[in-house]
Amino acid sequence: MNVIRNSRRVNPERSNNRRVNPTRPYHYYQDDERGRAQFRAETRGATLRNPLQLQGRDVALRANRQPSDDSDEERENQRSLDSRLSHIWAQLFFDIIECVPNRRRARDGSWCTITKDNRRSVATEDLFKGFQLPFEAVQWKRVRGDEWFALFKHFFPKKGQVPNVKRQNFTSCKYYIDYVALLDFLPNQSAKIVYDELYKKFRDLAWLPYAHSDRMWCTSQGSSGNWHHIPEDATGGPQIAINGDVWNNHPITLRNAYAHLREEEEEDA
Image 1 (tube, rainbow, N blue to C red):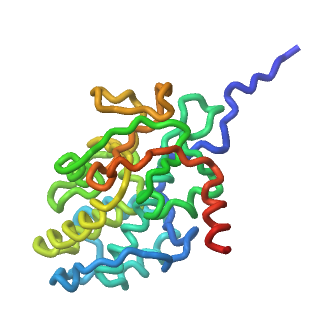
Image 2: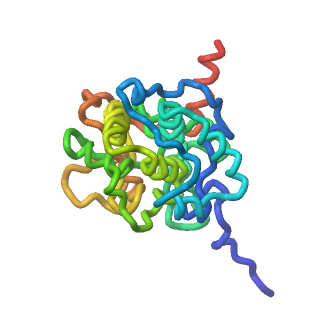
Image 3: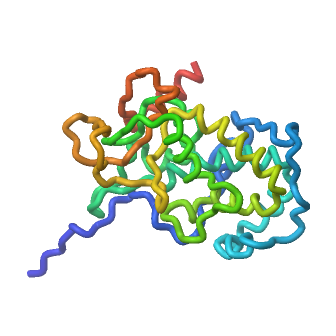
């Protein structure tokens, strides 16, 4: 008698963080205009070269796009610089959650406590401005000053300093593809203004994945003694950077799977 083993059954809650195609546009799943961040790069004098055709690094990045993205690309070309930045910024949070790490065994889900059906609608800037972390367990570290800026450079490398290598998670994220493509259309001074505008927003975030130069998410054990675990007896979980400049000793807790439903009920009340 043959016994069918279920040990290799894949948990449907696992994220597709080893994707080949880029992440989908956030506005497919969220209100395109809801609470979008506003930028002032154009007011400060930043200009955008006429994006009539792809050039430079865009050629390689364009190869990663899906054919169905052509209409999105045309719409992107019609946006102002500030509007493009707003969409890249919103896409960032969507992509971070899309690439959330999975547990080691295939039958286990991801580390995220937000169900797969709801992640795409919840993955907004608001999620990253609070200290309720949407994970079953985390290892977190307070990061501030130069270390927080170094984290920013992993997510948004400067023009002329974009790594010419495949970076796990980053190079399959639409926000990153769009940002790097945008750099080719920015004169050097405009690129500096854009960089400054993005960092103004970035430094107000409460937490982010503790990204490394080669990957966005890491679940290995933190190597220094500055790491804290939630729950305290946990031995694993994603590495999370807590922004020490906005933390102010606020309680750091884990967000359960249904927190977003209570928030929606409160908004409707």
